[in-house]
Image (cartoon, rainbow, N blue to C red; front, top):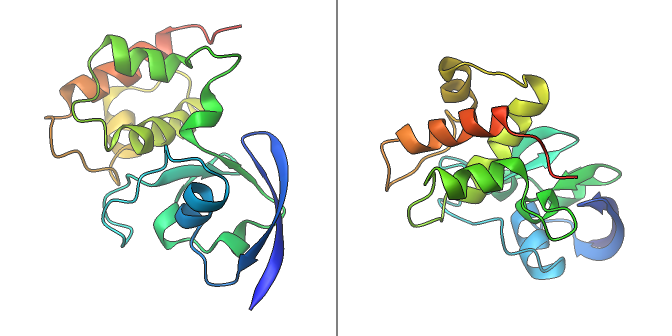
Length: 157
């Protein structure tokens, strides 16, 4: 069955015909053209597909798109404002928080949710917020440093 999905993606209202069984990750990548959200494990275990739904982190690979009707969905692309990287994007770049980069969008989105709740988290809070995100390349030290640095940065105007 197909229905019209009405939601807001990265601040823009959308209305798209979507099959009821389409996953949010597939909707974002294939319909909305937002490829920053990665499909990693395809089972809700790695966190690469993390997006924000009404400011809360959500795994897009196990969320049906139709469950987001009437809600606000944010992807890593939506954090950029006026062509300027967000503080988290800048910090991950400057502090070498990403290696291959595959997990980075999910890490950034989970970190964004944390910083919205707690603008000055300690390392334990950062580890807890990223507990559902797996990185195969790093020891997480640079990722935690990146989130800590972002917390100290101003958002671009």
